[in-house]
Image (cartoon, rainbow, N blue to C red; front, side, top):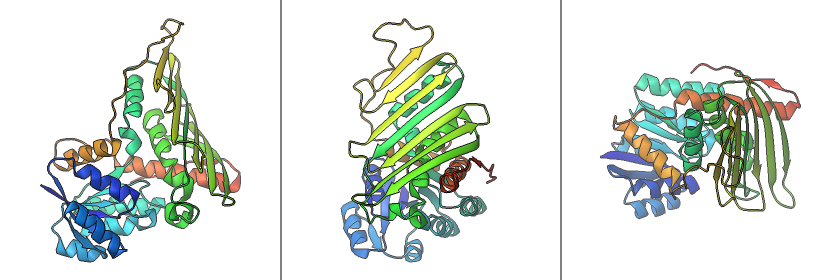
Amino acid sequence: MIRVGLAGTGSMGLTHAQAYATIPGVVVAAVLDIDRDRAVQLAATVGAHPYSDLDAMLEAEKLDVVDCCLPTAQHRITVERAAQYGCHVICEKPLTLTVADGQAMIAATRAAGTQLLVGQVVRFFPEFQRIASALREGRIGTPVSLTMLRQGSSPGGSRSWYLDETQSGGIFLDMMIHDFDWALHHLGPAERVYARLVQRFEPRAFTQGMATIRHTSGALSQITGTWGHPGPFTTMVELAGDGGLLQHNSSESTPIILYAETAPREPGDVPLPDLSVTNPYRVELAHFVDVLAGRAESLVRPEEALAALSLALSARASAATNQAQVVEVVAA
């Protein structure tokens, strides 16, 4: 039985707790939150012990893994303390706020001989897995351009910690990191990025970031993220290759369409199979449990999370200076 200490009782902490309840071989043994009442409430729901102090939880509980769903500014200290106690760590994205902190987190877990598993959950969304499979199968040839859009309501309202870059890193690190990670994983390392940012807080919070990335392969990515979009949460992807095109729009009734150069040009161009209704967070956490149990190799390496962080930081710097930035190649 894998004993989990769940750090954080916000929306992600609740999502993880609900997922663990459906995964065999896992028990949430402890719940941590600086607000003890919130820790007590969630702990009672899952049958765990509540804590408001990280060290107290690590001292009192024999945990196999700490699941970090805390604000990003608290990731490094949580990972390092967990590693000191010999615990594996599942850490929500983004890895942390700076490359140096990310390197320190990876070094700490390596020194302890523990796993660091970063929650880049878009890798586990069924529609993105289907697109990735089609790409691996050569259905569109060599990828040459990628357009991604992710838009939803402003997280937590106008006073949310998400809107404080010192806590979350802002939209480039917190939201667009999903698409940066996916683009790097499938199109290869980035060499340059140019980005813009629009942000206002009245009459309601609205933030939009846009980034154009040139990969070392020569492929281009255009990524847009929006907090404060008045419509439903939406994702869109268009991935063009030298042999075809893949399109996804979460608001469409046919969510993924493949247009291959050899396909007939008529209605009904080769759609990929229908998607099942699957909770990607459960899929992700079940995979991480398999990794910790030695049944699988992690699909998300900490070095990849660090590379996505480096790209996000470069995009944020570009938006702040209105100058294209060379993306630093970082060593873990």
